[in-house]
Amino acid sequence: MPTVAEQSYDPEILLGRSLESGRLHSAYLLSGPGPKPREAALAFARGAVCGGGPSRPCETCPECRRSGPREETAIDGTGKSGPLLRHVGDHPNLLWVERGAGDTRVRIGQIRRLQRDLHLRGEGDGRRVGVVADAEWLNQEAQNALLRLLEEPPRRATVVLVATTSASLLATVRSRCQRVVFPPAGDDPLDDPEQAELAARLDELPGASPSQLLGWAEEYRGPRAPAAAAVHQLLAIGGAWLRRGVARNLREGTDDVRRALDADRELSACRKSLDQRNANPQMVAERALLALRDASL
Ligand SMILES: [Zn+2]
Figure (cartoon, rainbow, N blue to C red):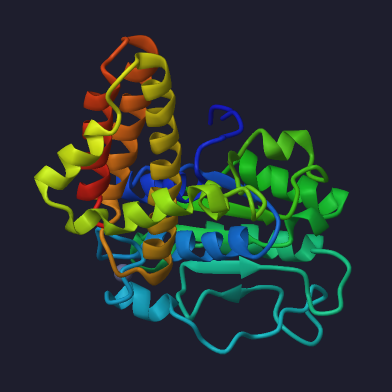
């Protein structure tokens, strides 16, 4: 598998695209502070086996019902007072490893067990996903066992590592994973009070008429440099607004995110034409606002 460089792309959109395309890498590394990477790993694993769509997990198909929340079995890394790993919900193809309660490490026995179970033929020959949460707590020997699993991934299996920071992972482990980096909370430009007005206007966008859209875009007339800077600002805030909406939809599993992904692509194209082609800022703003409206968030 080719080495994939660290992605600076929005994590939820990146994972959504993987699910949407159906072409999953054999390994992912989700890193960042707080609960988000772990939540995203859970949603991603469930989405990988979801038989519905287009937004995954759809929460209505039989696979999603099996992978839905259950009372969680406490894991014990030594296997003495509990299992080494558990299933997500009671889905046979979704495996979850984490640090046992009160344990200081994710243990090598847990990784070996994961490796064994991922090699077993999954139910219906469907995709299997093994999540290793608390991956920063893997010791060296457990990482070496994990490396063997990543080097020879079982067919139709995906391993998802979740870590607060990837710094304690071996470079050889990191390099075999598609990296997905979650930024610290507070980096969201929508939280900036100076952008509150623009964000509030974007919230009104889904119901906007064509003439309202054109009227908004007309605000970006005038000398090119300041107009282009203002459109860049619109694209940045619009992108953040889109990502927030996608994250919400993926969490709730209630909506189609494909149109939001299309809109995100369109915003990238807008940014390019604004930078490279000397495009008219008002026209670019029009395109961007149309795309954002049609994201149907
Ligand atoms: Zn489903």
